[in-house]
Amino acid sequence: MGKMKRKAIGLLNRIQFIDLAQAVNKPAHQRKDWLRNYLHRAVRGGKFPSYRYFRAALPTIYGVSRGLDPSPPITRKELERYISASCNGNDVERNVDAALTLFDLVRPQGYAAYGHPPRSLALGLKRQAAIGLEYELVKGDELIFQFPFPRRNRLDSHEILVLLSIIQHAYAIGDREGAVVELADLSCSLTAEEASPERMPKVRDPRIIRLSPIDLISMDDLAPEVQHVHDILLELGEEPDPSAPESS
Image (cartoon, rainbow, N blue to C red; front, side):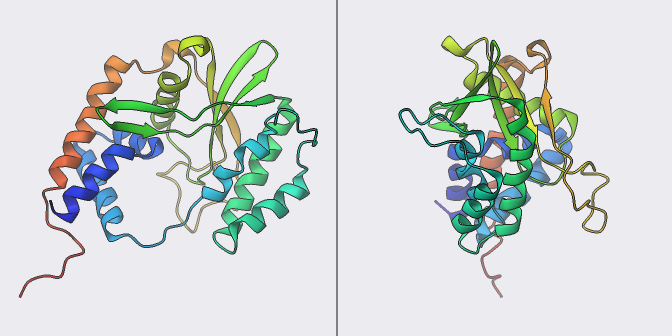
C-alpha cells in the first residue's frame, strides 16, 4: 500500500470533525480539490500552527468540577500564565488569545461545568469523527454541549449548521437526548470570502450560536455527504504522492 493510500485511510479513520464539516460543506464540484489539498498537506507533514494547548485547557477555562477538589476556578491572569507555560514556546500567542477570549465570553454566563467522556461520531466500521468535548454545562434547567471554535476565520452559516449537527448526533443521545448544542465562536467578524491577511481584524468578535434542533441536519441527510467524502479520499489515495521526487 502506497503512502498516499495509507494516509488517506488514516485520515478517514480519525478525521477531525471540523475538517469533516468543512469538507461536507463544499459543493460537490469543489469537494475533490479541497480534499486533495487536505490530503497533500497531511502527506507532506511538517509543523502546522495548532490550538492544542487551548483545547487541553478547556475544562480549566470552564471550571469543570473536580470532585473533592476545593480549589476555586482559575482567574484570568492565572489562565494566561498557565497557557503560556503549557505552550513551551510553541504557538503561544494564538493559544493565549483564544483562551482569554473564551474565558471572557463564557465566565459571565454562570455555567456549572462537569466532566463528560469525550465522544466521536461513528461514520462506519472503525471510522469516526473525533469531537473531543470532555465536559457538559448546566445553566438553569438546561444541559448544554458547547464546542469552542478557536480559529480566527469565521465559518459560514452552513458550516456552523454541519458542526452543530455532528455534535448533536454524537452527544445529545441516550439520557442526554434533551441537551442543547452550541458553538462558542471565537472568530473575527469577516467571512472567509471577505478575509485576507491584510484585512483580518486584530480583535476577535466572539459569540455563542445555538440553532433549534429542528433546523439541524438529520443523519439520513448527513450520511450520504459523509460517505461522499469517504469515497473521494479513497479515490485520491490512488493518486501519485506529491512529496515523491519526480522521475527523470
